[in-house]
Length: 330
Image (cartoon, rainbow, N blue to C red; front, side, top):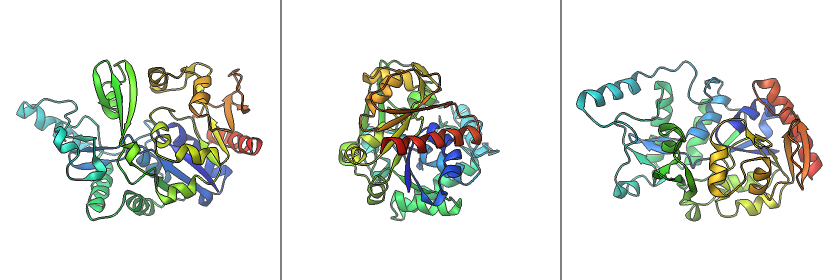
């Protein structure tokens, strides 16, 4: 058995090869839910859905989010209606009172659906409507995720990190922004001053997640701050990771990041934006997989390979390095 911590696109890309190296039935994927938002009344779980759509073989592998070939007629009509009515576009947070009223799982991340700032495909939206409705019927997010995983015929076991709401809030020179506003609407242009995982101190990992963390763990080349950080902020998670073999793949080659806002976010929270900074963020990791061109000297076991992942063969190469690193770091 092996557990992958997944957020953003880094770890999902690695999963393409992991299922060639490990029996898919022996893989558990714990998905970050700090990026989740409720928009127009529908609960959207971007990092969980990337794994869901990948496992269901419908993921748009150009963007690594959404469903391949999906239409966006509803999204386009929302934009048209807002323009015709003279409504202000962009992220429209619901009031402070509304953020913590009603559906508990959506706390601190509620947006109006007027001219929605996230482009949501029509088939993608059906997933969010189903998820939200099942939550409203009384199912936990874990139960709903397993129901959806069955619908998409996932071979791996997919778990949200918690059934409790955690919101990743990026504090910037433009004020506090939910991660989705910072990354999608503002294109990561505001200067990062800190990152808060709101609600993490009151949230708990589920029993299923706790069991998964007792197995060897792989952290793929995901953003350490906003993709993996929300999981580490949950009570007991870091302690669990100290008690099990953990290997992490650096999303950097020395101080050159592969993609995304990881460098700015790490700098903003006080970590060096580099492989050395990733190692500092993961003090519990027993071993690291680094790129052949990465000469960073770490105080942990290191396995080197070409860590760039463009396709399934690349992912398999990195996954084999992860398996080797796990065996080395035991």
